[in-house]
Image (cartoon, rainbow, N blue to C red; front, side, top):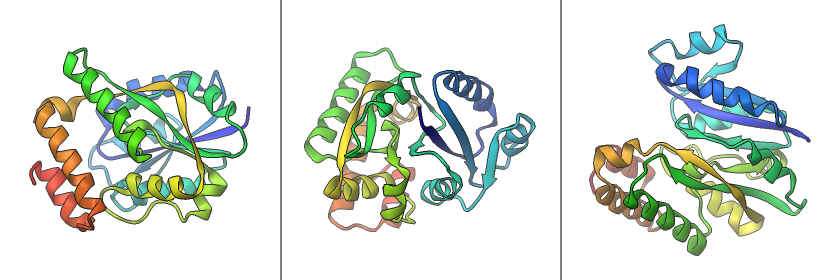
Length: 228
């Protein structure tokens, strides 16, 4: 198998790191993988812990777009895999990527929430439906892009929010995509904290506002303020 680069933007994630890194270490059994952590200026012991445990970590300007672009510059893998710190990948992710024909330039996984409720299952179906009709994917779905294509597209736009949507819209316009036959499991913390219905409405409204041209700075304030 070729080398894969898993790029993980982080900020104040010290409490999650032992479990996260233990899960990541299991993936190296199945493929040749490099992990690149990109810190956005953590104020806890995130960076110290990673260095003590021999992980590659750099610190750059806060913001997922900036962080992921910085990680991509260090990456050596044929595929760049952008993984959120609250999302876990199955070992079969790499096998699924390796099986893709050469014309497939990018892709993403199916997403499952770590909440065993009926409404969580409906949210997952909603995400799949949104992706099917729009072709757009978000970071929770673990975007993966061939490194040469990512560089040719100029990477993520340097914006505070919707960088994943912006990139996937561009990629979808010019390149073939694969929805990988694997599931990643992501945290439902934000859904439970703010309420499923409220979060669904907020996220759909923000994506619609983005398509209509509302500035990402304003969208960032709306999203993290939890209101429209």
